[in-house]
Length: 163
Image (cartoon, rainbow, N blue to C red):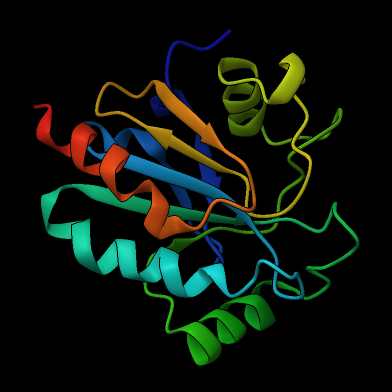
Protein backbone atom coordinates (compact mmCIF):
# COMPACT_ATOMS: atom_id res chain seq x y z
CA UNK A 1 0.00 0.00 0.00
CA UNK A 2 1.13 3.54 -0.67
CA UNK A 3 2.63 5.55 2.16
CA UNK A 4 0.76 8.83 1.58
CA UNK A 5 -1.38 10.81 -0.87
CA UNK A 6 1.63 12.46 -2.49
CA UNK A 7 2.32 9.34 -4.56
CA UNK A 8 -0.73 9.90 -6.78
CA UNK A 9 -1.56 11.88 -9.88
CA UNK A 10 -5.01 13.04 -10.97
CA UNK A 11 -6.34 14.81 -14.06
CA UNK A 12 -8.09 18.17 -13.70
CA UNK A 13 -11.37 19.04 -15.43
CA UNK A 14 -9.35 20.88 -18.07
CA UNK A 15 -7.26 17.77 -18.79
CA UNK A 16 -4.02 18.59 -16.95
CA UNK A 17 -2.31 15.93 -14.87
CA UNK A 18 -1.53 17.14 -11.36
CA UNK A 19 1.01 15.36 -9.21
CA UNK A 20 -0.39 15.47 -5.67
CA UNK A 21 3.19 15.95 -4.50
CA UNK A 22 2.57 19.66 -5.17
CA UNK A 23 0.31 19.65 -2.08
CA UNK A 24 3.03 18.37 0.26
CA UNK A 25 2.74 20.26 3.55
CA UNK A 26 -0.88 21.30 2.95
CA UNK A 27 -3.97 19.96 4.70
CA UNK A 28 -6.23 18.33 2.11
CA UNK A 29 -9.98 17.84 2.08
CA UNK A 30 -10.73 15.27 -0.64
CA UNK A 31 -14.38 14.83 -1.62
CA UNK A 32 -16.25 12.72 -4.19
CA UNK A 33 -18.87 15.05 -5.64
CA UNK A 34 -21.96 14.92 -7.87
CA UNK A 35 -24.08 17.60 -9.52
CA UNK A 36 -27.51 15.99 -9.09
CA UNK A 37 -27.34 14.69 -5.52
CA UNK A 38 -29.31 15.71 -2.44
CA UNK A 39 -25.94 16.63 -0.90
CA UNK A 40 -24.89 18.81 -3.87
CA UNK A 41 -25.60 22.04 -1.90
CA UNK A 42 -22.54 21.08 0.18
CA UNK A 43 -20.55 22.70 -2.62
CA UNK A 44 -21.41 25.98 -0.82
CA UNK A 45 -19.84 24.75 2.40
CA UNK A 46 -16.81 23.29 0.65
CA UNK A 47 -16.20 26.58 -1.15
CA UNK A 48 -16.57 28.43 2.18
CA UNK A 49 -13.93 26.20 3.79
CA UNK A 50 -11.72 26.85 0.75
CA UNK A 51 -12.11 30.62 1.22
CA UNK A 52 -11.74 30.55 5.01
CA UNK A 53 -8.68 28.32 5.24
CA UNK A 54 -6.81 28.53 1.92
CA UNK A 55 -4.32 31.11 3.23
CA UNK A 56 -3.56 28.83 6.20
CA UNK A 57 -2.84 25.83 3.97
CA UNK A 58 -6.12 23.97 3.31
CA UNK A 59 -6.65 22.64 -0.19
CA UNK A 60 -10.08 21.30 -1.15
CA UNK A 61 -9.96 18.72 -3.94
CA UNK A 62 -13.21 17.65 -5.65
CA UNK A 63 -13.53 14.38 -7.54
CA UNK A 64 -16.82 14.03 -9.46
CA UNK A 65 -18.18 10.50 -9.48
CA UNK A 66 -21.11 8.91 -11.30
CA UNK A 67 -21.23 5.65 -9.32
CA UNK A 68 -24.12 6.59 -7.02
CA UNK A 69 -27.50 6.89 -8.69
CA UNK A 70 -25.86 8.21 -11.89
CA UNK A 71 -25.94 11.67 -10.29
CA UNK A 72 -22.93 13.02 -12.21
CA UNK A 73 -23.85 12.31 -15.85
CA UNK A 74 -22.05 15.24 -17.51
CA UNK A 75 -18.60 15.51 -18.98
CA UNK A 76 -15.79 17.69 -17.66
CA UNK A 77 -16.97 20.96 -19.32
CA UNK A 78 -20.53 20.55 -17.96
CA UNK A 79 -19.31 19.68 -14.47
CA UNK A 80 -16.97 22.66 -14.35
CA UNK A 81 -19.63 25.07 -15.60
CA UNK A 82 -22.23 23.71 -13.16
CA UNK A 83 -19.88 24.09 -10.18
CA UNK A 84 -18.81 27.63 -11.09
CA UNK A 85 -22.26 28.92 -12.09
CA UNK A 86 -24.31 27.41 -9.25
CA UNK A 87 -21.84 27.35 -6.37
CA UNK A 88 -18.96 29.65 -7.30
CA UNK A 89 -16.54 26.76 -6.91
CA UNK A 90 -12.96 27.99 -7.06
CA UNK A 91 -11.24 24.99 -5.47
CA UNK A 92 -9.51 22.34 -7.60
CA UNK A 93 -11.89 19.99 -9.39
CA UNK A 94 -10.70 16.85 -11.13
CA UNK A 95 -12.06 14.65 -13.91
CA UNK A 96 -14.79 12.19 -13.08
CA UNK A 97 -13.45 9.06 -11.35
CA UNK A 98 -14.69 5.80 -9.91
CA UNK A 99 -14.25 5.63 -6.13
CA UNK A 100 -15.26 1.98 -5.67
CA UNK A 101 -14.56 -1.26 -7.48
CA UNK A 102 -11.79 -2.55 -9.68
CA UNK A 103 -11.65 0.70 -11.70
CA UNK A 104 -11.46 2.95 -8.63
CA UNK A 105 -8.89 5.71 -8.92
CA UNK A 106 -5.68 4.64 -7.11
CA UNK A 107 -5.99 7.65 -4.78
CA UNK A 108 -9.41 6.42 -3.66
CA UNK A 109 -8.11 2.88 -3.15
CA UNK A 110 -5.53 4.40 -0.82
CA UNK A 111 -8.04 6.67 0.99
CA UNK A 112 -10.62 3.96 1.59
CA UNK A 113 -8.09 1.42 2.82
CA UNK A 114 -6.46 4.03 5.10
CA UNK A 115 -9.77 5.13 6.64
CA UNK A 116 -12.45 2.44 6.43
CA UNK A 117 -16.04 3.46 6.99
CA UNK A 118 -18.69 2.11 9.32
CA UNK A 119 -18.18 -1.54 10.31
CA UNK A 120 -14.78 -1.52 8.62
CA UNK A 121 -16.11 -1.40 5.08
CA UNK A 122 -13.74 0.26 2.64
CA UNK A 123 -16.37 1.06 0.01
CA UNK A 124 -17.69 4.56 -0.22
CA UNK A 125 -21.45 4.54 0.34
CA UNK A 126 -22.49 7.75 -1.42
CA UNK A 127 -21.51 11.11 -2.91
CA UNK A 128 -19.82 13.71 -0.71
CA UNK A 129 -17.85 11.28 1.44
CA UNK A 130 -14.97 13.40 2.71
CA UNK A 131 -11.39 12.56 3.66
CA UNK A 132 -9.32 15.00 5.70
CA UNK A 133 -5.59 14.52 5.15
CA UNK A 134 -2.93 16.01 7.42
CA UNK A 135 0.19 17.88 6.37
CA UNK A 136 2.01 14.53 6.49
CA UNK A 137 -0.09 13.19 3.61
CA UNK A 138 -1.85 10.61 5.78
CA UNK A 139 -5.61 10.32 6.24
CA UNK A 140 -6.69 11.95 9.51
CA UNK A 141 -10.41 11.18 9.32
CA UNK A 142 -13.22 10.04 7.04
CA UNK A 143 -16.58 11.86 7.16
CA UNK A 144 -19.93 10.52 6.03
CA UNK A 145 -21.86 12.30 3.25
CA UNK A 146 -24.34 13.83 5.70
CA UNK A 147 -21.60 15.67 7.64
CA UNK A 148 -21.76 19.31 6.60
CA UNK A 149 -18.43 20.90 5.63
CA UNK A 150 -18.75 23.56 8.35
CA UNK A 151 -18.92 20.79 10.96
CA UNK A 152 -15.37 19.80 10.02
CA UNK A 153 -13.89 23.23 10.83
CA UNK A 154 -12.52 22.29 14.25
CA UNK A 155 -10.67 19.27 12.85
CA UNK A 156 -9.33 21.37 9.97
CA UNK A 157 -8.13 24.09 12.36
CA UNK A 158 -6.43 21.47 14.54
CA UNK A 159 -4.53 20.08 11.53
CA UNK A 160 -3.64 23.54 10.23
CA UNK A 161 -2.09 24.44 13.60
CA UNK A 162 0.34 21.53 13.31
CA UNK A 163 3.38 22.55 11.33
